[in-house]
Length: 173
Image 1: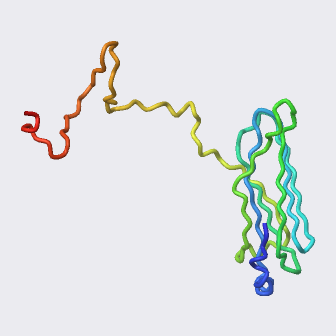
Image 2: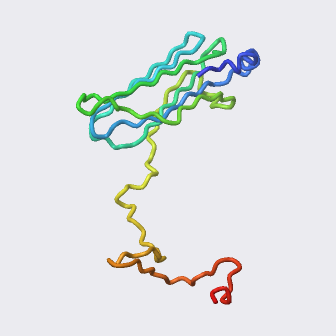
Image 3: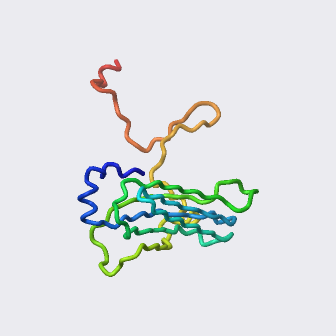
């Protein structure tokens, strides 16, 4: 991610001293142990690294990891974001951790009492219904598709028949 768009405004932003917030959602594999690594490298030389390990048969929940960077003297104009994840059992392949909703924001209004860089982790509750609870719905309308009885097609019709545009009964004579 490159903040060079803000480069021309960096003096003004430095005066405002916004908090740089990075967040990402992480979901481990549930059928085997897995791990993830997040690394942020700011152009002012600051670096933040985060490593998480998840056990096998975990709770299948997404974890939102958030980092607030407050203590900078010169506003960083770029950030390099490195995300990596893998399972810890080779038999399952290297499909490991999933990442979603990567976000980088500048916050102007934050808690005034906070003066240090801060890392948070939030476990997110599931919003997706379990597949087993999603029973198929019965159709209330007949499909009216032709049925093959062996000789000819017989149309199952419960709807009214329609004539073509402009045709009248006298056209059949």
